Length: 391
Image (cartoon, rainbow, N blue to C red; front, side):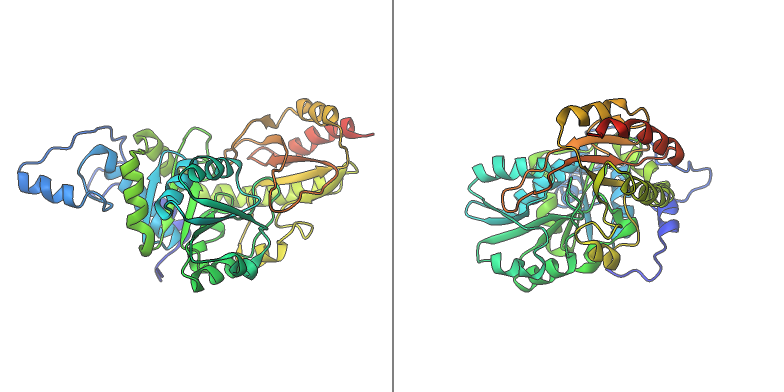
């Protein structure tokens, strides 16, 4: 969906706010409620019949004014036909896969996929009779060789979790569309600030809005963005399962969107600065940051993205678990925790899981998230701890 009037900065600030009336607040109010009442039975029945349509006021689980404002701004950011909110990124991934599959379906999943996506595919989805096949994330157009009549979806990420390979989104999407197979891309790292995957031929995009979109590590929320062909199926699945986004989370995401571009511009610069600095340290074997030529798929990133997230991997020469633990524990400006995309810097050792490909790096892999702290402080913190990785 092309919008010639679209301006990213204007959209982030102006869209999804209260309707124009005199004396209005600049933010939507927190809207809490379950039951919605109607004056006539005919009005109630009309709402019930349209309950899966975004914007319909019927019952709290289906959405409210604030939720629809958030869906509206996200759809415009993505150039999308439809957006469905969920209670977490994992919920967006799982409900999308459930909407597209049935017993006997075949799903192709990138081998560097987010761990919880793999857990869902190998667990609940497989238990429902869906065949899961993992593929090399750098397969490109050769994905067509894995497609067959039962293939219901292709699930991949940009970049991959932990190891940060950047796939050829265009090649995979083109091959899939030629075969009539929908593609699902997890674009949490890039956000619509740096890439709009639907414009590259992807059918469905999922996000953990708990990360950059909300941006303050205080919100659990997922987003599913799709073109018209899959929108109703996905929305019905979410509603039938009974997944629901909380009213406070919706407001936190709307708040986070206002500064999304500014935050990501800083994180892009700081992340590249830190990745380049770390790359020059003697304890480092490889830096896995898509903006660096050393990262697999760097050329794909250069072609498709306008910037980079602040999450990247570092392979250290050491293979000692005790040395890595001592290094991580010695850091002061980097918190230890899952998730990322907030204002704070994080560090976490990573053990990649592979079933279709091999992870052959001899050293230890550690994931860094660069937040909004001063980069000189982060460098000093790392410089003090890095000698703990020396032989």
